[in-house]
Image (cartoon, rainbow, N blue to C red; front, side):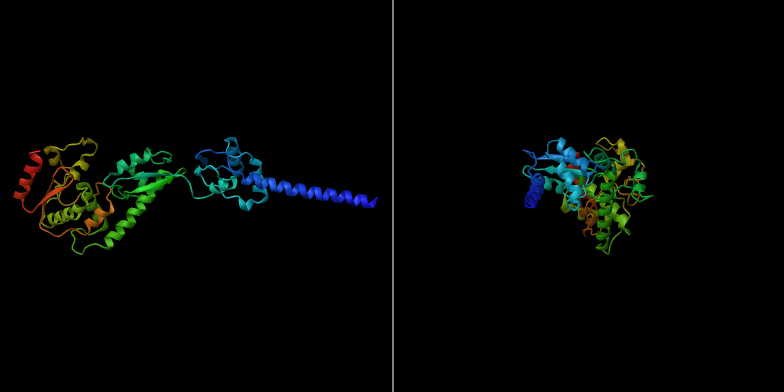
Length: 335
């Protein structure tokens, strides 16, 4: 009788152990099973979502079949459950449920490019940020001064202070994040460029270099001309000549500019019109790139004092007013 009882208990124990082992194996199999996906798809982890909420949503959308397996994982082996990160993720066919969960806690979020071209104004940059898809907009209703205060730069005019480049963002980021990155990069690059400046300059501060770089940026898109244009501006300032650069006229006109400037516009007294004011305008007129910043602090030596557009993106440079007038007749008036 005792032997039979002990045998029965043994059967129960063995059976129970086998059930536990089998259950554990099945659980691990469900965790490691490939997700139900035939082609790449995006999944978004929303802000504030908990792990159980996400796995239930993954089940409801058909990516996984057994939310219970992952919920059990969070209770039994919480160290294997990553902290989820807000954003979009690219799910790929063949990945396992465990790989999917690991992905949702990684830095491999889907990102989007946002390109700020060299020579754009801060107003154009703001319009780009306002219309960037999936980028949270926190500044659309703010004035320029409020934006600069938000960035910790109170009483700073924004023009010129944001480095033009391609930035990447992901869901959950805002336009303020891009602005902070662009501002930080411009401050760092301006500091580097100023430290490597030529000793013989007509500008005395990094901010004046930023202004000069913005003039150079707006005057030419030809890389080989930037230092020569900087040299012309330097020599004109040394000789007490006005800079007389059309982009400053355009900037001073603001939204009134419609693609053409007239003689009356050249004579209009604005704080930026370098046909009227002496020296440089009070602020930058655009967002300059690194090449223009470097040209501003390392102008090309020479004797040229004038330049005129050839109409193909390059300029003709002249040493004398007579030569310049001939070039104007050739490239502007005849055209």
